[in-house]
Image 1: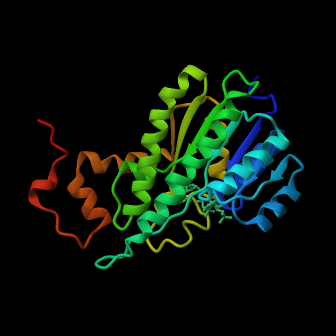
Image 2: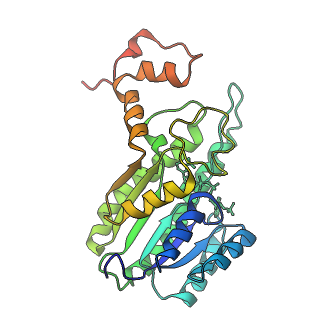
Length: 263
Ligand SMILES: NC(=O)c1ccc[n+]([C@@H]2O[C@H](COP(=O)([O-])OP(=O)(O)OC[C@H]3O[C@@H](n4cnc5c(N)ncnc54)[C@H](OP(=O)(O)O)[C@@H]3O)[C@@H](O)[C@H]2O)c1
């Protein structure tokens, strides 16, 4: 199977933002796209835009519904060649009295919901006729540096990142590749709620286009834009300067002006 051979691709979180744009771009290249999210109406609208797209609504946190989804996917195709685990949500904590339950809600979708998707997808990927089926996880550049109020979102994405880096090793024997995609700020319904500056904000179609092009080579990680990756590396080299930059009101201890210490 070459990169031009039509694949069967399951994309989660396809009702809006990056997932929707990825579905349209991949269907436009002739791939068969199974598009999931909770919003059935939006998915059905999406499916009218390209006959290669099939709408299969599902809440990824609902394990019973995921079992039903497995059967519905298998009615469409006995196997999957690629999965793009993109569904996600974001809630910020407001100090000094945060709603701590937000941490569990965000983990439930981003981490445990994605885990439900992995459990569903692996047996179908193993049946793929492609030489190397492909798991793509949409994580985030947030894992490269701490941001204030991002405890829930950042921890859920860091958990995803570790999970998929580890999974890559365990799937190597099955010839299944794993790519972790780390977008920077992309203009989607998720980021439109943000009330802080978002450096190098990208348009959604451009971001999806970059993802489609760059995952073809199946890198372990694909992070973009490079300018943001470079900026975030400051948090490792000069954590105190980073903290002053992103949390200007905070007092930074003098001892914190250098990088991490290992002895
Ligand atoms: N935008 C950015 O700057 C940015 C940066 C880095 C990473 N990301 C990641 O990119 C991914 C896509 O986000 P986006 O920016 O495109 O935001 P978005 O437009 O809000 O898309 C999120 C998608 O996830 C789906 N979803 C949420 N909860 C779900 C659930 N329980 N079950 C099934 N589907 C669920 C939503 O659909 P329903 O509501 O219909 O279920 C929607 O389709 C997320 O994982 C996000 O963390 C985004």
